Length: 137
Image 1 (cartoon, rainbow, N blue to C red):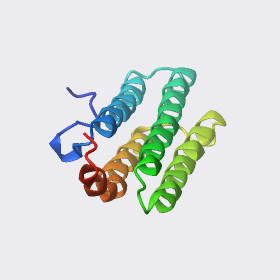
Image 2 (cartoon, one colour; image 1 turned 60 degrees about the vertical axis):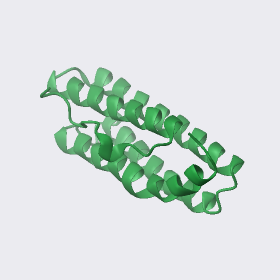
Image 3 (cartoon, rainbow, N blue to C red; image 1 turned 45 degrees about the vertical axis):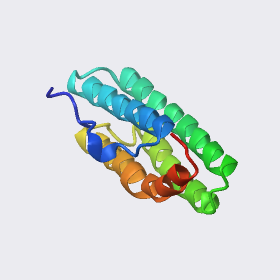
């Protein structure tokens, strides 16, 4: 499908069910934002799609950190810091869009795709062996 920017594949599958479901939802949110841009929808609709992505990413980060704390993941503080940096980058993008300091374009959405790829393939892949070792499905 031409309007898919983030194509979900096994590459992003961590084997931790709650994280995989939430990561897929984040990818879907990025794709909705991308489609809104391709369809030249107005700034408010694009802003709503961006707002949805930001809110869901914050909820995902909170859920992930709760699981990590509950299983005693030793690097939860570092992972939280990574989440804070990612959240700040998305919030800054959203604020610039809403203040018209930045026009949302394909470059901006590509940044979000890279942001999510980094979240899954780098940050989250660090805790995957730990959680699997604890029996988290």
